[in-house]
Length: 618
Ligand SMILES: [Zn+2]
Image (cartoon, rainbow, N blue to C red; front, side):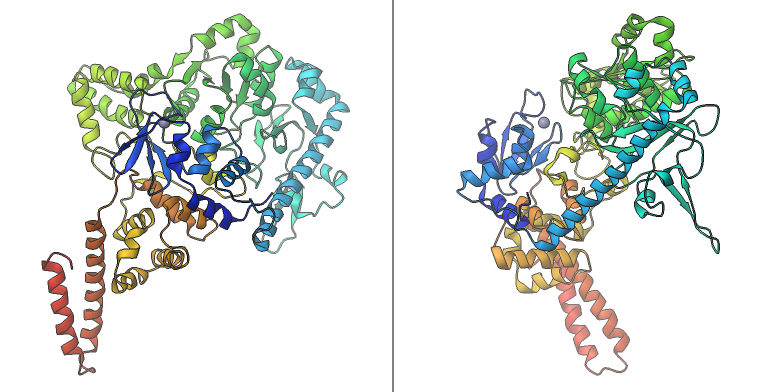
């Protein structure tokens, strides 16, 4: 069902996020906003803020934010469609179905179609790999040698890609089909002047189908039978497969996660299958990458307890360090994160076989808690017998601590770090909060918005069919907003200010170079058509706009509780005008020889310039 964008925007315009949130959370007015206890994480003092002007909610503790629709989805557990229908009903609106802009609908349709086709192609390949396994005794022997039963092989849909360059040519009618390349099954290799070569990516390998949480095949992992290289080969990134977000075995494990009460994150698909065989069906694996915040966030949708398991070597320590970075933004008081380091000679499979399931279960329960591991990481390489070493510890601890969500755990860690550094807790906190990495004083240090902390995948901005608005890299985040950025932030967050500007000021802003000027032209158009709107409504209207990502980034960067004052916009305008005047004066100066009026004009402009530079702004 497609709901037209314009309807969503209208719905956001009509609804009141304060009223919607107020149905579930007790809110108290504090300044321009309403505050309450966050319903998304446990807390004793309110850090959950709802802005009636922006029509947004935002939690300074866990970072959750969104509009009225997002709140209903996150808190009341509604789907996007249900939330829209719920809101529409309370405002007596009829949800229009299937009459979205035809071009947009067609695009969405094509996208879905293409992904479905890729899934079909992958499924078909998987089926043929399974058939080949049945007729390949040496592959079956290999699996048996690893101690796998036929039952577990079937459960995970294991197969075998035979040796040979073009086995898939007998599976698909057209081996030249672009979909085979797009799905990553076939490699195409065309060098200059040569004829294009095509061949199967996976040859003589045990095939592990990778499924998404819906159970659709989105790619493969292939393991060599013998000593060939690479030992493990994965599908490349495709429109349906992204290593940084997918976890092997999650689909198969989802039931077991609830029963076991935790997920075990391992380093490879062989571990997952072997552990399932050995009585640990609650294991998943990353796909040849370090664990990302996206991975961790996905896992926490299924369980509150994550145990990362690593081989006990240096590579394992490095991987653990990355997993820690991925997990810290989600380490709230109600969640449990542990790190398990296996003895150097073992992987989970070999450990269970050597020592038994009970010994492994003990290893899991004795795993290092996040609080201890974060301390170990912070102390790494520090000689704490010297003041320098303790200072280094503090420096290493700060980014780790800062990326955690507010809560009791974070407060306790502050205590521990303070003890280790040898100064008081308040002193350390003051030091850490006083020099924020960027932005406003005392704000960003307590803000858990590291790049991954924003619950992007579950936020309303990331609902299906819409591209994620952010490539938010650290580089983008830490970059201080320019004057033009600030103008956009202020005017989008508080559209009323646009209304109060003079037409001269409007044109100053509209003349800013793209994309800023363009975005304000869009804002102006919205203002002319619909009047003043909340930020939430504007963001709905901006969907699919070519500069949507820029606005998203700016809004996400803007401290959500700091309402700009009119003075800031005025001084930005003055600065813009000074810039513009200086430019004009330069131009005129160059033309002075040929233009008799230039001199008089320059004098005029200089007078204006001087008044701008000296006086309080007009
Ligand atoms: Zn929260």
